[in-house]
Image (cartoon, rainbow, N blue to C red; front, top):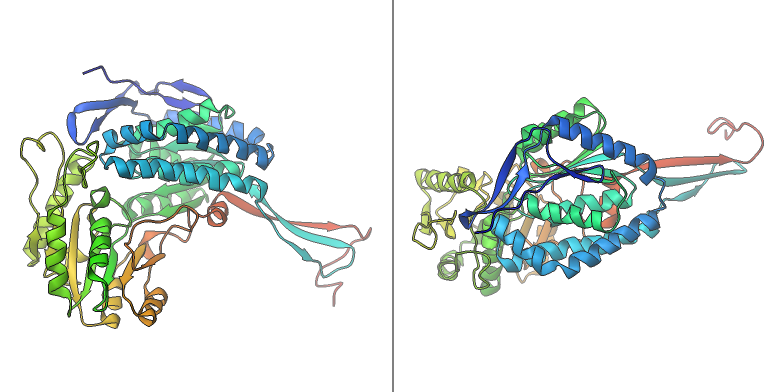
Length: 498
């Protein structure tokens, strides 16, 4: 096997080694013997250098007209489109998702480039009449400054693009810290930024762990904004760190998403959605279907058919086009899933499918765990309340719509939700009453489109929404209100207008 390539940090337009002189390996979770790349194990000094470069570049970048900033992003999308297959294959090798899903991840970054770049000729403000004569009032958008972007491994190119592209079109500069389990996809994104001629210091890239890079970035007084996607526990720490320096903080965190199946649902369609929601990306999505709430009248039939279909899903290396479910991303995640399976058993739930690590020869070099279905789950069980982030789904029983909604909302999270029904009245009641940032009707809990707001309520987020241009722009820009008085005299609002 060829020697693994060593990748460097990108700071102020140069690829540089970490000041720590330490590195870490990025290994294939389907075959831990394969080293995908060697990356810099960075420390606070590297964060300091990257932030300083971003702050210096910000003084120039903010003055580049927004349509010109957008031209860079259109070119970024064009190159990603040409290299979609190459980058998708490398993504599958580094974090395990099936190749068809990895292609979708790269496509999402392409879509974000084209969609958000269009804001370069909008970034609309407002105009409004003044209450005083010979006076004009309007608002404009202003960039914020140097932004820290902290991204996860499960969508290693799509989620960085959600943050990077709107930040840049608004006139900000960035320091990107990717997850240590999937830094290569973010590297590709940054490398293309360099190729298209992005000015020095506008985009900076620092790899390493949370303690060495993430925490110093969140605390740094020179960073004006942190955009974080990850667990709710880590998100809370980021929020507290940001509060110390009064920086803006956008959080997109965990989920315990429910899919409701009513007695009038088209069961085969509901099963399609449940399988896709529960087991795509090996259940490692914040929007994954973790709970299925089924009307008691169709509960047994639904369970029997779901188990039959789930048992037929093929587990294996995601580079195999026939594979449906890839490996878990690392050993710690595998152990977490196994612990929750045992918790479910101890609580009295019944694992009617899966529940045991795959250890045959074809799985022995990776972190493979089969699709697992629990029945006999009640709303108070940990299995039904805590985020697992793996291919484990709990099926609960409901007496009717009101009971199903009550169960669905009984969670500290509120990201995604879904209901299968042919009754329009039930559908609209669910749209209104589900406590979630996203609701699907007759579709799975996963499948968000890039031009709509993405995010949730409760411990899932803090009110910001990525994705759609108008909501992403709100994160990465400040409102500035302008008053132009051409009366030639001092006018006093509210006083002169009495």
